[in-house]
Length: 195
Ligand code: GDP
Image (cartoon, rainbow, N blue to C red; front, side, top):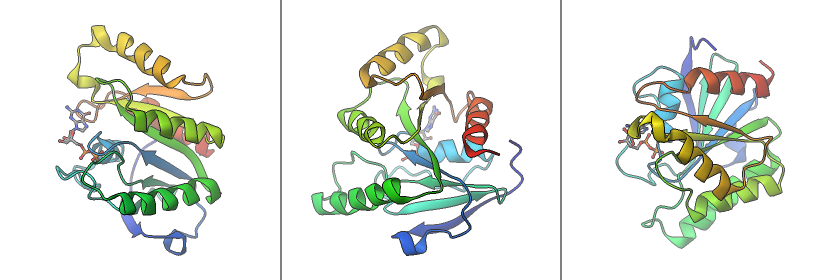
């Protein structure tokens, strides 16, 4: 997809702030610092629209980005950040759960993982939970530039095995640094969004 327009729309704290124009939504989930903001920036070819930060856990809301007036990226708060209080975590959990279960325009969840490391317990829980509710998932294994290509397949297999990845869910290797995987991910997103 050729991105001609991308804008930050809202940092929503609840459903009454979600957009009402019914464009398809692609949500991004992943642990803090895994590279979600960098992925969004790479997908829309902008350096800094989505805030990449060295303070994980800072994003506490659902951040909406509108692309080409055609679809939204919805960035979830990163999980697994120890300094966040239990109460705060429960509040986010509830908000995300409600969104995932009730948002009719949701087409796909990108579960963003770090290709270098096996999925964490939180990653596995997230995947199992999404599957329990039959939500389509695409695993995006980012930071691929950080390991040599010769080892990619070994890491891919370890990740797929650890998650018990369903055959119906896509797996895309990605690098926000080099742009590897960008075209493949856009192709998948436009296809599931019916664009
Ligand atoms: P977020 O918390 O998930 O939004 O993560 P960020 O996008 O802020 O990324 C966290 C850190 O990882 C930053 O220092 C990024 O520059 C770095 N990073 C993210 N994606 C990549 C990637 O594909 N390759 C490399 N080498 N670094 C990355």
